[in-house]
Image (cartoon, rainbow, N blue to C red; front, top):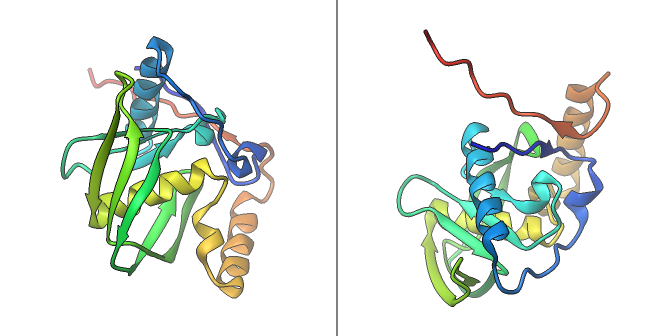
Length: 178
């Protein structure tokens, strides 16, 4: 298991548009595994590369209601329906907001073998994929909130962070019993 430190709100990499990967390599596959390990350790359902400080268009999603999704250079090619739902983010822990998203999407992405494939996602999976693709574009869920709700959430974030410096959170695996 290889865990990556999480970048928190305020880290400049979260606001960068990630660069294209192109053809995945063995290093890309290892990085994807690191993303899954980190996401699961943090008890998330998705994680984008810039959330671990790497500005590349790679993200993973695992909502535990289907096969995990690997997103490399993803592009949403179809969107259907609209629904408001609560979202949170591993880079802005313990804060949540209502965000409107498509309820069904089709994404074109590169598989680890280098082929371009289409992946359909609905409901929570669709929400998570859209959230992670936003990250790859330097967009955070708070950017979808009204100015008033965004200000309230950011004030709450500042209060939570009072006295803390830096924008990196290191994950530590729980000790094994015994």
